Every structure is written in structure tokens, then in C-alpha cells.
Image (cartoon, rainbow, N blue to C red; front, top):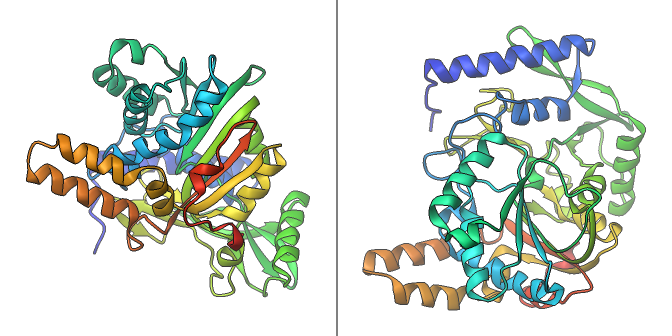
Length: 393
């Protein structure tokens, strides 16, 4: 299906961001790493995709995340994270990374409260000022005042503050600005972006030591070097990002849900152009330079790298399974039955069943999305008892 045309205001917005990126490229001497382009396209203040005011989530936006489908997803996550929160006890913090529309926080807070596991603090680490305001408005309107009073927003990690509790991130790692590499004559090169008239073009620049070491680490793990011309994404900064967002977390659990693959599938010989793509109005867009600032840019997650980063941060690996297995193992059937019992008519019950299908069917989110957890001093393995996929890592 063709992409919908842009209205003049949207085109003007994209033009302003494109001009900013051209200026950054010129100041850098003619090229910037792709990760820098992606950072500007998504997060440039007031202009980047996540920093500007257009609708991103849901049917009126560019893509649908699991929390936007309804409250079943958040309730199952709350069921999984309630035991670690109870173990931590008084002073526990629930830290959500990237709050989206606020739909997850709304449903999770209400269910944690019903379970008697709502912590004193629910912190949302949200770098986008626009999204923070949308989240504040939603939670202020829909949560009881006493629960809303426990919510706080952060524009940076907790830093030097010691804390314990749970850290949760849904569809966050896929939006981290990712470097791109390409193999030329056995050497590692990094993909850069240069100006090409009003648009942009890909160039290749020498890879720095960190990128070189990260690519060679993947090759050693795979047991075979990448073929000449092989091109993909790699996040050498992922371990540093994990340590930054967790800060001085003393004990608790970390849960990440995202789309991606274990390493051997991520870097399969047939996937020699990587996983990078964009989304605009529910269309997949192969050209990540198109409609800059108006489309999401994303890359799938290497879950083997995530396992390495989580354990490297001093946590124990708790488990890895598909989103479908994770939700079913954490009470999806019970939550569905409870909501169906409260549904006012058959139409509402059908919508609940449709929500379950979208969350669990392999052709929808069920297999493409996976869940991975880590623990330190709390019980969290039980959340991953069904459908273990750790043998694929």
C-alpha cells in the first residue's frame, strides 16, 4: 500500500529537522555515524520523532505496542513483577524505561495495587518532554489521586541514589541509536551518513576500536567470520546503557520485552542487510532517510547481547521466552477470564479475545516479541517457567 501523503505542516517539520541534520553533518566534516543520524532523527529537541508532538502509538499513530491493545499485557507483567517487589518490601521502586502513552503505567499501577504490591514510588524515565506531559495528563485523569501521587518522572537515571525494586522496559532497546557496520576485505567499516542534495546517502568510515572489538566478539561467538559485504547493526554501548539506567540498583529484577532474535538468527548469513527499518502510519518503510522526524526508526534486538549485558552488570540470568509464553505463564488466561466476567456485552468480550490473539499468535506479537529477565537477591525465575528459549542464546 502506498504511504499517505504529508500535509504541509508535517512536511515543513520534516524539512526543519533535515536542515538541522545537514548542519550537523557539515560541522562534522561531511559525515556522521549512522547512530548519530538516528539519534537526531528520533530525539533532536522539539524536532525528533519522539520529541515532537505527533501521535506515535495506537491506531491513530505509526505503530501499536502491546500496552495500547488493552490492559491484559500490563496486568500479566504486574503479576510477574509482584513477587520481586514484595521481596524488596518497603522502599521498593518500580522504574519504567520509556513510558509511551502512559497506557502501561495506568494498567500496571491499578493491578499492582489490587495485588497489594504497589510500591511507594513508580518512576518513569522518559527523555521526551512531550511524552512526559501526555503521560502525566493520562494518569492524572485515570488514576485515583493517592496512586497518582506515587508516580514521578525522570529525565535521567537515578544516578547515585541507591535503590531496589524492578526495572521494566518494553520496546525500548529497539529504539536506541544503533551503529551499523559493514565488512570490506575482511576489515570492519562503520556506516556513516552524508548529505546528498536535500537528502542523505550512506558512506563508509573507519570503525573505531569499540566497534571493531564488538564485531570480532560476535564473529568468535558465531565461530565464523562475516562474509565480505555483510552489513548489520550492533550495539557495543548496550552494556553501558544497562548500567546507566539501572544506576546503583542494589537488589531486584529487570525485565525487557522487545522484538528480536538470538545472535545466531540475528546474524544469519541470509540477513546480510541487517534489521533496520522505519514505521509510518502502520507502513513498514525501508528508506530510513525518508520523512525524517515523522517516522520511527528501529532495529531488532540481539537477545544474546542483552543476556551478556545483564549478567555483566552483576545480575543473574532469570529466563528468556517468547512474549506468548511469558504472558500465558503469568496469568493471561486468568486475567482474560476476570475481564470477561466484568465485560458489559459480547462486543467487549470479543475485543478481549482479539487482544489475546494479537498478544500471543505467532503471526502477530506472540513469537516476534520476546521477554528476558534478570534477578539479584529476589525470586524471578518462576516468571519464565513456560517455553524456555535460553538454549537458543
